Image (cartoon, rainbow, N blue to C red):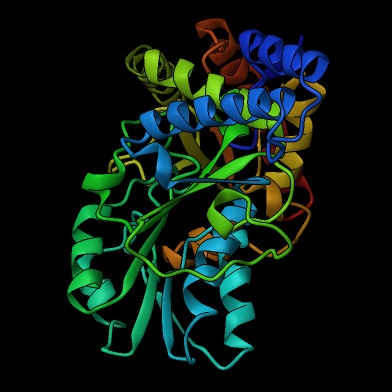
Length: 382
């Protein structure tokens, strides 16, 4: 048995995407910056993909800047705004992905004042949380649209309006949201929005930053005029093509995928209600339809994850980019969750190909493993 329930970390490459990528790799040798026929053909493929990605999030094709992935998109968002200014203040939510938090800390080391925006017990940033740190010197605010661990959705439109009123640029990491819930760049209020292909059945190693064209931005990578001067280097044509196809498929199937994921999540959480000592996180706020984060009293999350893996079930203990540490999740810590309980957290994230049978197998395995681990803990005097 092999059941993959870690789709917030990465998704399986859709066969239609794989075919598009393979075809491009086989047939396209031109450099998109070249003016001859092979170069123009490669350029046309990129521009088609730009249209597809823009359509997924209600943006204009000219607002799409392709990157090497979501991490680069997040880093570029901060760099593009901050590098062109004298140091001031930037504010980021306490639940951001490490690719955003660590980028912000880099700017803190370069004399920028870093303010952390708090969250409530459901993992939500409220206007009061934002107002508590927002000043006239705040140049940039970053709040993710959907959290990768809890799935909690943020009211980016209201937060962006508050930031804009204070004269700040607003960035949102929509990497987990795009393809799972409706996303619209214009109504989000954001000046900048990060995306990644491999979260929606596209290839790894390609992402995008959606950019308000009214902004004056500084490039992070120099050496060419690609991507409107913001991202030098010959484009990853095959990866970009795959991103475009994945985005188009995600838009076409959005309602179906949302309903399917929500059904599986509800089935899972109904089953979890019958298990002893289970706590659900962010379960009283809007969430991604595919995401459940839970902890079991007296059970270590990493140990539970490994026991599930022995049963052929893949889940996560949190962010895949921050795994391997012994500290509790910074997201749950920011929510005020007890450190011991937070260390027990695991995340289940469904994908389009998961089934009710997968949910039932997970519940059966959890029932066995929780009983065994709790008995072992009591015997050891934990």
